[in-house]
Amino acid sequence: MNDYAKNHKRKRTFSTSALLALGVLLIPLILISCTDATMTPADETAEAVTMDRSDYPDPNRVISQSRSPFQTALKNNNNAPELATPILGLATAPNGDIMIADAGSGVRSLDGMTEISLPGVSSIAPLGRSSLWALQGLIGNPGSVGGQSLFRVSNGNAQLIANLYQFEADNNPDGGIIDSNPFDVYALNGNTALVADAAGNDLLRVSNQGEIGVVAILPPEIVSTSDLKDLFGCPGSGAIFCFVPPQIPAEAVSTSVEVGPDGYYYVGELKGFPSPLGKSNIWRVDPASENVRCGIDPGCEKVFDGGFTSIVDLAFDEEGYLYVAELDEKGWFAVEIDAGIGGTINKCDLSSGICTEVATGIPLLTAITIGKDGSLWAAKNGLIPGLAEVFKVN
Image (spheres, helix red, strand yellow):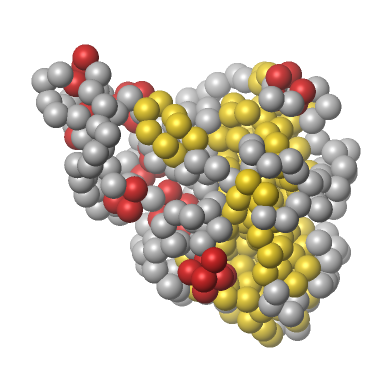
């Protein structure tokens, strides 16, 4: 463990908010018995249940899709276009404009006007006011082909650069189920971009000629299922999740990438099923790395060994502080069953490893960006048509 992880402390003042009273599309939960099931004393009254990895509830569905199908933006009372949702990315253009990746319509400005039609857009990285990198994320069900591409946009025209699902299918860097959900893009320059693929559990480097290289692969981690069981009132409720083993492997789910003041790449992970609390890591990747396995090979190590829950975005300010956005303090699976309490933004000092809470109780926090003036912006209710909002935090 490096010094950052050893010194990692968080100054928290938790606040609670009302549980979200909104309808949710429940993920089909198909539980399949398999080998190596482990039974604990609490499970002695029922046969232990494990899940085939292909049937685990998938965070990529929760963080990628709105609670209704992609739709044309409607008009609100102020006669300004509503955000169609889901809002999966925010970015600051060189001229200071706050830009929005609205997967329901395309790239939008802060006033809500659609500037570039690109349904399914999950993240943008402006190079200029009218030039940017743009990701099209997962459109459809996890594991399916739909979107999953990197574009270069110039003067309103989007040019396909790379089919990221095809790269995943051909190479499968993490060796798991073939799946792609490109979730965050960072512009190294006009010729090269970094892409965090949430379903691929990896960090990619893509040239403007469509050449794709694997920078780093994030590993699965054995985690406790106690948070999941608490969420379902186990053992008294008798819910099926009460009988999963006490520990199971969770995928990393890389949702965010930023370049720090030291030139290293910082990658945040959501952490997959069983959606454990406080187990989302942040990795520091040497820019010279190629095809490294984080935590095993040199060139990729933990900056923060856990301490976060369901990370969805990262941002550095000009002073070098790292801002970390968590979807919900109860985890992404709590959001899926309407049991969330809101997300949190923390400001982290990498030299000391201390993170200070900036804001909490933000419903469905999906993205952040730092304005040119140092202001912090965030998207709340980012998955809900009619309620999604981009606002200045401070």
